[in-house]
Amino acid sequence: MKLALIGTHGVGKTTIAYEVCSLVKRAGQNVELVSEVARRSPFPVNAGTTLEGQVWILHTQIAAELEAGRNGTHVVCDRSVLDNYCYLVNKFGRQAELEQWLGWWMRTYDLLAGIPPFAEEITPDGFRSEDRAFQRRIHELLNELLADPLFAEVRKRVIWLDGAERRQWAERIFAQTFSADRTVRAAQKPTA
Image 1 (tube, rainbow, N blue to C red):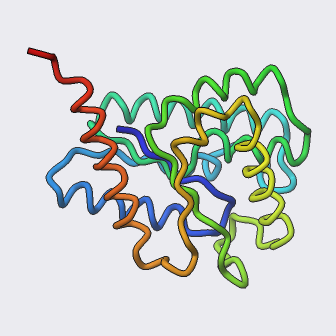
Image 2: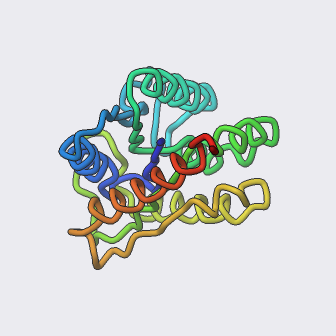
């Protein structure tokens, strides 16, 4: 089972990812966390990003997901490749040669939980951009990409969380994930 939290920066994806992992571990399941790779980028990020930096982030994200999948029964990603791609699109426009590859990779996620921008401001952390207009633009790009026919299959696996229910997000994601996991396991059982 592979879950990715999707959304713009500064909305709490990393916090929710840790909360979901904690619930999975408390349920006695093995889980690996893929944390945000952009923080390790040797290239500029946020509005000052470069094409090389964004390609590095996409490749590093996929490599981290592959490694986590080898080590854990369940994988929780605090981003998907699609929301990472939004930062590239924001600065350089859509890249047809990358989108086919991203569309293919997005099908590896069993569930995507969309975290909406909900706060009045972005909590400063010395890394993320605190520009609310930039944050909203990335959110808009994510929705535009999800509406594209290339990602039609992916849209079916997205649940958008309600900003008013923040305290229940991790529990809702956990319930959705394990419900989907039971369905996958049932479909994989050999028939008698």
